[in-house]
Amino acid sequence: MAEEDGTIGKAVAVLDLVATADRPMRLAELGARCDFPKATLHRLLQALTRQGMLMQDAAGAYSAGLRLVRLAHNAWNTSDLAHVARPHLDQLSAETGATIHLAQLDQGQVLYLDKRNAAHPVGMFSAAGKVGPAYCTGVGKAILAFLPPAALEQALARQSFHRFTPATLTTPEDLRADLAEIRARGHAYDREEHERGIICIAAPILATPTHPIAALSVTAPTRDATLSALKLHLPLLKHSAAAIAAEAALWRFPVQGG
Amino acid sequence: MAEEDGTIGKAVAVLDLVATADRPMRLAELGARCDFPKATLHRLLQALTRQGMLMQDAAGAYSAGLRLVRLAHNAWNTSDLAHVARPHLDQLSAETGATIHLAQLDQGQVLYLDKRNAAHPVGMFSAAGKVGPAYCTGVGKAILAFLPPAALEQALARQSFHRFTPATLTTPEDLRADLAEIRARGHAYDREEHERGIICIAAPILATPTHPIAALSVTAPTRDATLSALKLHLPLLKHSAAAIAAEAALWRFPVQGG
DNA sequence: CACGCCTGTCTCATTATTTGGAACACTATC
DNA sequence: GATAGTGTTCCAAATAATGAGACAGGCGTG
Image (tube, rainbow over all chains, first blue to last red; front, side, top):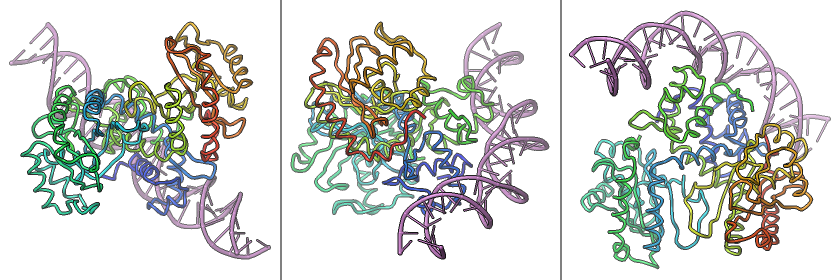
């Protein structure tokens, strides 16, 4: 990715640095995790804090600020995809009784946009904005499988494979083979590839046959269901994915993988 | 507010501009809504788009980008307040069967952090990140009432009063009187002041007696409940607010109203 | 079809801002 | 009360942002 946009590029790099950290960090600690000179980093942090993008606690440690939450609310709320998909998620959740995910591909990762969890109502941001690997999740593979070849190559080029479970596909070859099947089949399976005991089926949301903009999945723990049982929901899942694709203002979504 | 932070200040101004818009806008349209020169605005938009903070559709219109959602997810997820409050919201929601809100004061407005809706499960960002007026919502008044005098003056100074319903308090004097009562009483009422047919009771979450960091509310439509009925939930509400205050790492929260 | 009009993009000399090493101040620790 | 680590401030040099204007498409209108 182009890390060069002058001050703006540096500012979002710092934002990422702070937001990605699992706990609030002070100047010195942040300084060790990037290579901005101390004075520069200090100035950036201060400016971002004044703008509300970061906040600083009494101990001087920085964490992500409320303004980000405001901005994201607007981002999410004006997203056609999220809007259009919402009732379909509700319906899928009600009819299947399973956990539903809506995800998009963003910078080589899967980014979850929304979720329904039949079991217990779930906190707001517990899923939206969360990111995960593309190569071993149902939603990720469903999107990858329908990317045009060039975009797929680009996505694979910067992919590093980590083995999460015994079933994780850990080579480009294995993944490519699975993607070919998915393309032929029209939907993806996750056979405990990301998390042990969790399986899912996923369908792409296609703007055109070679332009996947997102994916929709039905997930269940292996103790509650088998893959064959999940397949019973396939018609519903595919219907929802197609309906969302039809309703969404698809032209608004740029080609993925950038 | 200080609108001066060089490039960073301009960048977030543009972010706000785009995110606040209710629909994607193109360069010319955005140019009409701020006074950046065309070329400057163009450069800012491009840089922010390259960084993923904005996205541009095929028509050239800009809207908020996914990176904001990612960042906000981290912001929200590492927020002690949201974390600590989550189980309490669940409990309150379960025990009262009503709608629960958790909100904070941010830049003179109420910013909702989380929500539980017994009736129908609700989309992720449908509430988190949403902003509303402080002077006519239960959560807003609950916070305002416990601000130290100087902070309250500062907050009131830039407040403009809009009449949403016949019950809306539309003068500083009326508001001050209500705040005094709230301070004495320990909790706030919203008697259809913001939305017709909606009432609520709200309690502040206090770090110290003069340092409110957030507020918690129980809301109901007038056709389902009266204010006296809602008051039955007061013990629970206050207990939850106190528990959250006790658990949260309160020192991490700066004084409000900036 | 050609014309004008509006929109987005690019250029470049000028200007203002960012830069970052180093000095300074402040605080905790031993 | 010395010491090490941290946050803050300075300031000349270097760099990046600036913005008026030129250029290029596209779109609809006459």
